[in-house]
Image 1 (cartoon, rainbow, N blue to C red):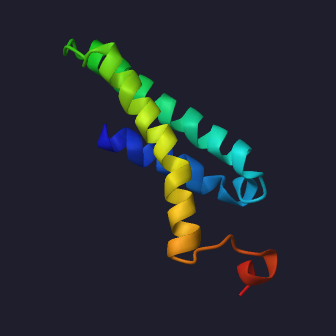
Image 2: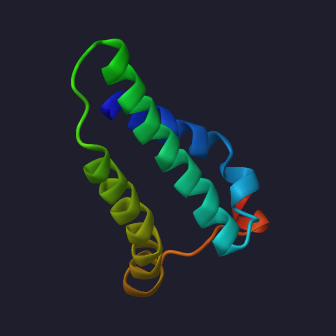
Amino acid sequence: MAALAVLGTEFLRARSHFIREFPFLLEWAVVTVVIAGVLLGNRLILLILMVDPPVLGLSILQFLATSLAYPLTVLFSKYALGVSKITPAELNR
């Protein structure tokens, strides 16, 4: 699972210059699709290795909790920590 999380994070990082310009809802959708891919990839690997995967309901609950935590994390980062998107002028520094 950790390796898949790293792959998902690197996928998003490699496309960050495109995602940076998306409106928040589209950014959230992209992140949610990557989270779903990581969870489905984990289940697929467990099935290939013939390991009993967790109950589907728990995986769906994990997916929903993680996806719903993303906007809360963004709000916390923006308002409590003062993190903001990088402007193109700041990118060239």
